[in-house]
Length: 466
Image 1 (cartoon, one colour):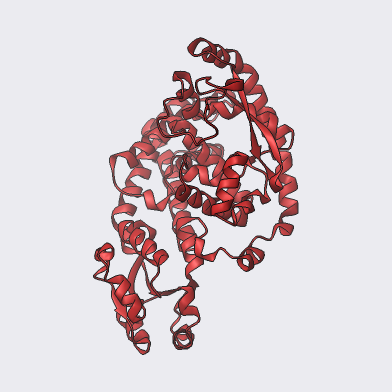
Image 2 (spheres, rainbow, N blue to C red):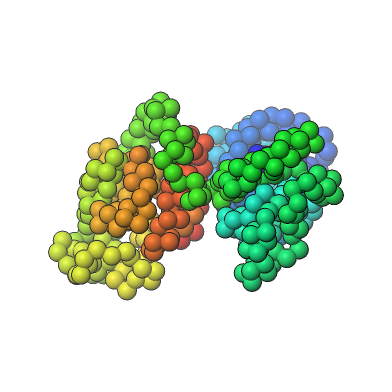
């Protein structure tokens, strides 16, 4: 919740400064402080300013863990400003205004002043506000997940949390004293649970994060109940872990947890609306496919021998298999244009089987465009867990008993896990991918889908696919 509050504050600040930028752009254009055109032009500019916020979002400027004063950060603001200026010129070309004589000049000035003010506001926020406004928290119990959280909160103060201490047992203290946790030495460990109130008063603690083992400890629970009157919040470790990492922690994986949290019957209306959106976007993809196919097909043919397309069997919703369509991006070594000779295997980073044009298609994700066919057939969705091959599913299910839960929804062209990491090639990486997929299945809604679509544009623009 605190994370969302800070994001909303950034959005409001950006919007206000863009309007201030518009005002000063008119002042510079006409050399007068009373600009009668401001009220008329500001109503038209609201759509462009909303577009500016969307562009800043796509560039990752509302990801608080990435908000730090560095050249790459401010470079993103410059790129967003250039793209916004191009859209603004097109907007006024299509919708000319009689309010001002030269909207292009005002747009240029608004871009320079408005985005310049946004950059200044972000510098101040990153340097002073984000690192000073912190919630002091205490972890009750020390686990591997607790260590992950402490590590990221210490390395990325932009999250807005500071670890005031740990309440634990002698075993927790022994675990904390290991060499791998040497960076945690300054964190206070309280073994005497009666000293909790002292820790709260001394460090102005505002939040307790409780591990499952501690939730069964009656002495700790009794003390925390009393601390409710100090207005100290309490959150379980699983929910806090999910809030920070945006994935489901594996220690929660159990039949009872999935029954309580994966309430698929409550999302039927949402799922039906998604079908309409899938068909709409698939039709747009089909038009794009028709326009680009001659060029892409020719490039594939002249750079390597083999078919233009390949199709592979994949596992879809409820475990049903289907054939997925893609542009061929690897050398044709086996039957049907396959790049595999000795059976299925995961593609590797810098895989030598990938062709020259295949690298470009993978980085731009253009190799996935033919999957509009799978979406129109109802086998896939625009957003969802990426479909895996049956051989890999069998192997992964043997290692991860709950792996099949990702088949509760249709597989997608893009998904939450793909935004976090474009490549998962080992068992450990696929477990992490499952954590992200289950986060999406548990929390999927219109807002999350919109976030995924916008962030996918970021991936496409930076060409970081594999």
